[in-house]
Amino acid sequence: MSIDPRVVVERLPAALLVNSALGLLGWRVGAITPSGVLAGAVYGLLIYLGAGPVAYAVLALLVVAGSGFTRLGYRRKVALGAAQERRGARTWRNATANCAVAAAAAVGSAVGWGDAWLAACLGALAAALADTTESELGMLAGRRAYLLLPPRRVAPGTEGAVSLEGSLLGWLAAALALAVACAGGLLPWAALPLLATAAWLGTVTESLLAGGRALNNELLNTVTTLTGAVLAGFASGLWW
Image (tube, rainbow, N blue to C red; front, side, top):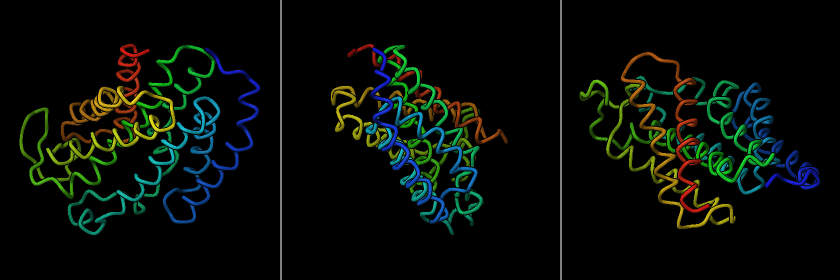
């Protein structure tokens, strides 16, 4: 079912207020650049208006936790040569890579393309959080890191490398994001394990494509969220 336009209008004041507050807070603490604030405002509004405040809460978790994970152990990440530039402050490119797929799926859900589009929106956000968690915490927690293609052991922080610890943390991050959606009534709790796995598989796709090569990080992140969205959308057919 499509959303009644009156519902969208009713959501607009809160969407503008909450979205502006999150963007300004992120800019004030140095987590988001001005271009990131503007891009995030667009994607955030689409997600709030199209999928609702609970889906936006998942987005907020992605922004807050992702920024915190990026700054955690920053000096060690610098020493590994894997630290994000600008202490991890997100630009419009980062916002697009992490949120554009979810925003598009939220619009699809709003116009009545099917419940699978809502699951795709949530799956994309969960995949983005899983990817950030694996990248930022995996290099700190992982004892051994490996490339999948071609299979070989590499130093922690290598682009596309995976570790057992990082993969587990990534799945847990996806599950946490989807737990917010379940608590808010968007998804049944029984769907959480399968949907979290679908979102997490997006990060595996990125690892397979990266293979230690110097590929554009934003493109890889987009592939991650798109894969998580598609798999979550298909998986939703098991309960809807």
